[in-house]
Length: 398
Image (spheres, rainbow, N blue to C red):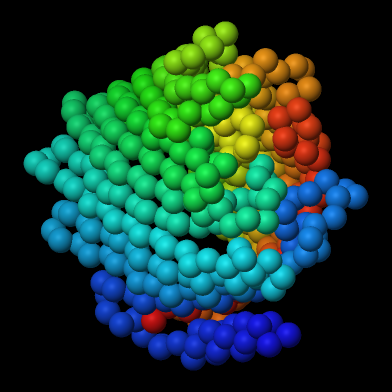
């Protein structure tokens, strides 16, 4: 009880700090902010029905954050950055308590008349989600990203662009270190820019994934490294003032360093539609078929097919509501070293509902509710589960 009382006292102090935030920003460049959240989940470790956990299936947590955001224009250049620290404390599973870190910075550059682009990087440290890893041992995930891209606009309506991204992921637990990876993504493309705001182009992309710690299966060390080549249509189509469609879809081929029987090719991409029937209502519909990493103890990649629907309602100048429905099926058969049967897939659903209230421009309160279900595959360790939860938070900017 003392720990719980101390956490609640800290949460109350943080909310009071938010509510008593300065009425004006510290400057027009640097913006300090603080936030406090209280969350509850009735199945924290995402366990199947009927499976008990040592400290119970449910838990609550508090998250206290403080940070700085920066936005500084210098002529045609723009510098942006954010630094955020957080303390996350659980009521029962206090061995999971951790300090989160988020750092990011970007230079949005422009040169001559027709050249522009971005150079930036980010660093993050957080708790690995329990969606595919169901242990009560703390497993922190560290992610790093560096990127650079450039655009050259020529002949008024044409644009060439190219970019490079490097992603690096590391995990604390030794049992998860086979998921440590480095992903390099290089792309280039050409677009036609219509006067209506539409864009029609072609994008070529090459990705390479490296896993420095080999996955051991049946006493054999396996290399899950891969490379992927894609050729896709890159379209943003303004159908009207209230309807737009974004397409990044085409063909992809994925090849592996070992066990080339896992190699596959076919349709790959994402289509997103935006509809804003009124100034207060906005809907977003998306569908995808993409390869994705999996943070599991048995498999590390899947081919995902899914769809989502998001809706936002700006009820008043201060009050807004949002809702989301999402469904996704993951197929593990083609992209893992083990010979997997037709049972090697799972399907998940998620629905959420949230509200935000802004009594002042620099203060925001939020409430969200969600429900998750998954029909899993015991063969690859992604069991079935149900989970519901809620979160209440406050954020203030100074």
